[in-house]
Amino acid sequence: MEKETRILNRKAISDADLYKEVSRISEAVVARYIRRSAIPWREREDVKMEIIEKFIDKKEQIVSSFEGKSKFTTYLTAVINRMCCEVIRKEQKHWYAFVDDTEHKLHQNEYTTSTETAKALLFREEVKRLTNTLLFFNGHSAKVNLFLKLYFNISVKSIDVELYNAEKVHDIMKLLSDIHSVSKTELFEIMARVQELAENKKVGGDAVRMWLNKQIDVVLKRLNNNDICKHNKESLAILFEMREHMQLTY
Image (cartoon, rainbow, N blue to C red):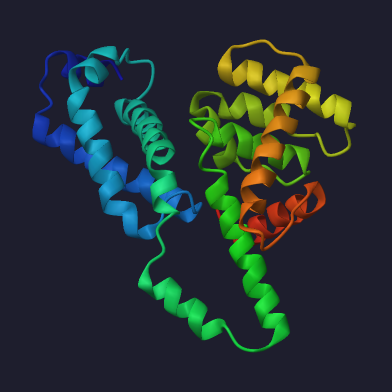
């Protein structure tokens, strides 16, 4: 490690080698998020290139901030992972508003006169509408998604937390490790602690409850504005469960 730090300080590592390593790590990080359904496959190259551009813009700051407390590749991976999360937060609403011709044709082929098939398609479309609805919360989409999953007792994945705060994933997941048997009052207190960890802002359970109820009202209002379905909290919980099985991300 001392050798690696010394080489870095002397700038013995060429830009070409550095960018080659950044490209390799970026590809691996993007692939991991694709497997988690956080990035569409069709966007893999664009996301990779955006990460590399971000790195180039901040290269001097990134390299100079390396303190040698870990391997340089480990440090680079953490930096690139954080950049990838930034890209996901910025671009996700555009990704999932897009419906390509292949998906459209698939839906057409699946649709028949069968009542059950029609219902299944309707539910699928409602789940997709929920996914799109969760995108439009002015930078709070990841928080709304995480807290609603907790409220509806849906299993939380590390990616849900990572998109909320990539640096506090371990601490927050540890806090959420055993919440399935708690009361609603206790759950809101845990949510308050999650928010404190993620945002460095202390709030009480009642404040989180009022905030979350407001977000639920917003989601229901947006889902019900097409006069096709009339959703309430119970049907919203069902949509969240279906969304989890369909492995759709917000």
